[in-house]
Amino acid sequence: MRAMKSNLRPARVHDVPAIHQLVNFFADRGEMLPRSLSEIYDHLRDYMVIESDGRVAACCALHVTWGDLAEIRSLAVEETCRHRGFGRQLVEACLAEARALGLPRVFVLTYLPDYFAQFGFVQVDKAELPQKVWSECFRCPKFPDCGEVSMILDL
Image (cartoon, rainbow, N blue to C red; front, top):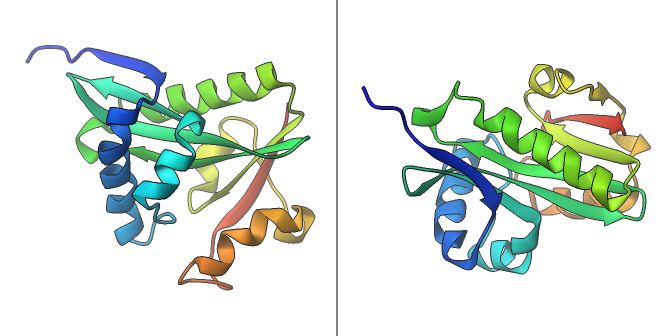
C-alpha cells in the first residue's frame, strides 16, 4: 500500500464544492450544521483544508465572532481518511491562527466533547456564550434541543 501525500493549506475558490459536499455529508447525518455553497463562498477565508492525493479530504473553519472570541466550525474528515491526524492538524492550525490574530478565546459547539477536551477545551453552559453565537442556532432543525455541547478554550 502506497503512502498518501497530504497538505494542509488555506481553502481556495475551487475547493468550495468539495467543502460543501464534505460538510453536508455529515450534516445530512445530523452531526453538524449544513452549509450552503453561498455561505462557504462568503466565508471562504475562514476555511482550511487538507488535500490528500489531489482531493479535499478534510476541512475546518475558524470564524471570528467578536473581538475576543472565535469559533472552530465545520470540522469534517472523509471517513476513508479518519485516524490519520487530519482533524488534529486542522484544529491545531485554527488555534494557531486564533493566537496569531490575538484572540483570547475559542469555542466549539460539538457532539464530540471528548475530542475537543484533548486540546484543552472545557465545557461551559451555552448561556455563557454571547447572544451573537446563537444566530445560526435558530436555523437549525434541532433548535432548541440539539444536544450539542458548548466548550471554550482560553488561549
